[in-house]
Length: 450
Ligand code: FCB
Image (cartoon, rainbow, N blue to C red; front, side, top):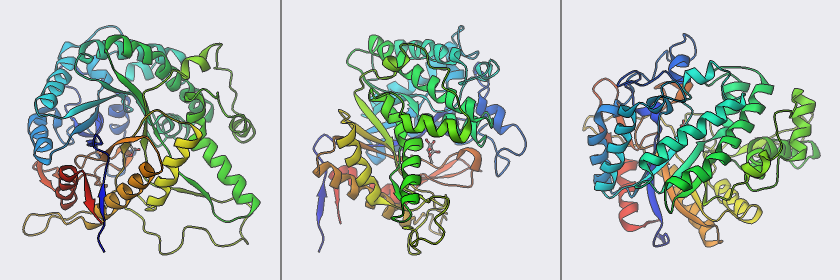
């Protein structure tokens, strides 16, 4: 029996991208170098030896991309601003040509009836600031506020949805701790300091954005997960709590005014010898600035196993679990659990799913279509879970598919396709995948038949 799933009337349907992943034009019109330019230009960093120098060439093709968004009926578009296009040296001198680009983009979106959601930082730090030490140094947070001021002063009359940071966990711990993202540093102490300065810069920027953009909705986007113990053993439960602390609570707790979780500080100290000496008086109050919404990026759940649990019951990732090309388990029920948990534990005023989607190997068939059934099924299952959470009271106001189009997937280069629009990187041709056609219908009907 089919069931009609209908979303609340003002539910917002969108897609998301980020500057480095789609723009290209890496050194045009006065843009400065970013840490991702430097990183991808360093041999051995990107699995297919590629760079974001050209990627989707969106910097030149933005009008045609926006037309496609309008054809699909998208109501909102989340994109990020490349800091080094605006301030090539990280602070000080403003590059008008960079601001002009985003000004035209915003006008182009509004003219097509698409609401812009602007992310200020999606990982492309000006290299000049990294040369001073980057996010582990407090100065970077101060520079971010100057940047947020310049951008919100220029766009704030038309942009009313602002996201300060995208996934500070990834920026801090993959960039400075594990070294698999730019700037490629492996130093846990630097990573923890970076996480603090990212949060501090967020807290400082919130009132600045509000001051420049009347009626602005300001939020932050976190990559969050639902952590399950691999078995009911005490060791696995303890491991799950540690992972939840590291991945979720380390950012949620301070943002919602609870300061850093004591068990995680203890764990950082015990396991990584990390010190918290970068926290200054008043920082925690700044970080707890009240927000209009929480942005949630959700892709997969996490199954935690304690070190000594070898003989315990099998893991909860059963053999029949499905995994995406990233090796991420498809776990829509965990999105339901996560949204409810956020609602009950933290009570954000509003939640947007600012990213959700999947990489699968896509092929263009003879007739020129891309039959991405697995991506369509992934999005559908997650939308169902999101809908269930709304029925349970979660204040979920909108959903953004990652991604509008295939793009440069960080250290995986062009080997992972997340788009609902296929990109032929040789010709720059765009082809709407079947998932994109389906999503367009979902938007038109504000729901779908299940
Ligand atoms: C998220 C990032 C986004 C994209 C997706 C797959 O962590 O925010 O840029 O890479 O993962």
